Image (cartoon, rainbow, N blue to C red):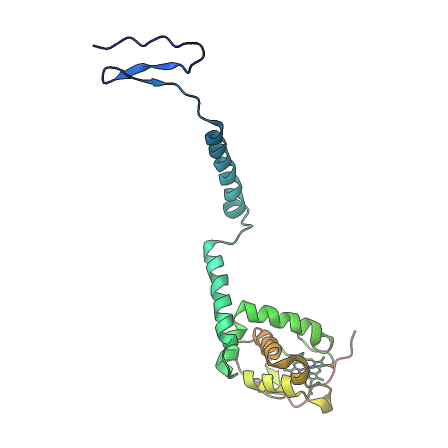
Length: 194
Ligand code: HEC
């Protein structure tokens, strides 16, 4: 037998019309505000998140975020490599952390002679495949460390120290490819600044 729903007193939530198992009835309760705010907040968050990452692409993709983290880990590992050799310098030149640090050093210390595009001025062109003092990574490292004072290239070893020189060399190498031809250049003829 189904009892008829009881009438709702005016100060109570309305009873819903259905009845289960004979006499179980439900109130039609209003959802509490904290619950509604959580729902609306989640919807607003979703819209913002979707716009930021999926639509406008302001945030990095997952893949890019992983790459960034891996580059940082690799940079730490490379920085801990005690010996500077050709292979590790090439690796550093493909690592954005090293290259960015090197770009900063280069732009503050080397551009006045080598120019921002590295194409040469007072100092030699560093993006072509002609090298006066050798184009192997370790040879470039040695040139930067010891300089060629007689020709106007200061020795940077005492000024910058190993870490910054390594980064600057990685930056120069980022303009080159491992295995590209290395040609010998007899001397650099300074280009007068424009
Ligand atoms: C005061 C000017 C000056 C500054 C500053 C300078 N260089 Fe040089 N650099 C030269 C000159 C001049 C040469 C050419 C030397 C020669 O003819 O033997 C040269 C040569 C080089 C070479 C050798 C190029 C080759 O063909 O073998 C490298 C590598 C180099 N510089 C890197 C750097 C880096 C990295 C910095 C910054 C840390 C720097 N230089 C700052 C003037 C400068």
